[in-house]
Length: 115
Length: 114
Image 1 (cartoon, rainbow over the protein chains, first blue to last red):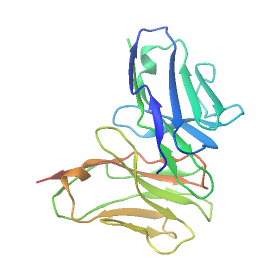
Image 2: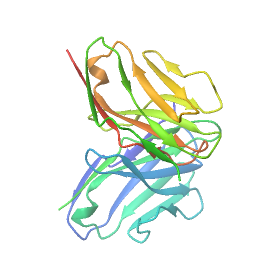
Image 3: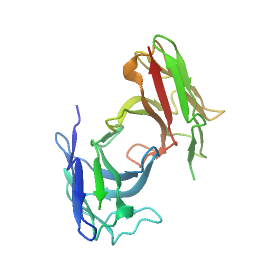
């Protein structure tokens, strides 16, 4: 089946640092990848849509200069949280779409804790 | 804009019993996709069941089935013979076409007890 690998699964870092999260489709090419954010006991909220070779489309209220998304290949999208602060602490999860009439496949998520 | 509403924040059921989780949505589209996802404490997102709006037949996956009422914009999930492993948060989700972002409801926390 389609597998999406997300790395790291958990990261703790100091305020002011930048953190990169990778989302890889292991056995398929992903035309589109999505990045979601989930606060504890809440729902998933779409942050941005990432298409290979083009700029990501950000949802209203998401700072594109703070959450940098790069989709350099059909199997890899990265989310970089720049100058992270405690309020950026959250669970970040990606999904990838294989194309045609198929559902999205989710990575296992990244728990980000900013001290 | 499309919206998804789950009106039951928490539900509980005993093993072997049947439980139904409610979901309503709002859209002006005629064709779209509806999903139920399970999120256990590990926080993985697991696709439970998927329904395409143009298909009148309700989707079924083993113990999981849906009651899709297109006119009423209702998409409930029935879990039969509940098991302890069904304990999780369940999200109803909408996509207006394949390959577009999912819009999630707020979720229902289901607890299955022995």
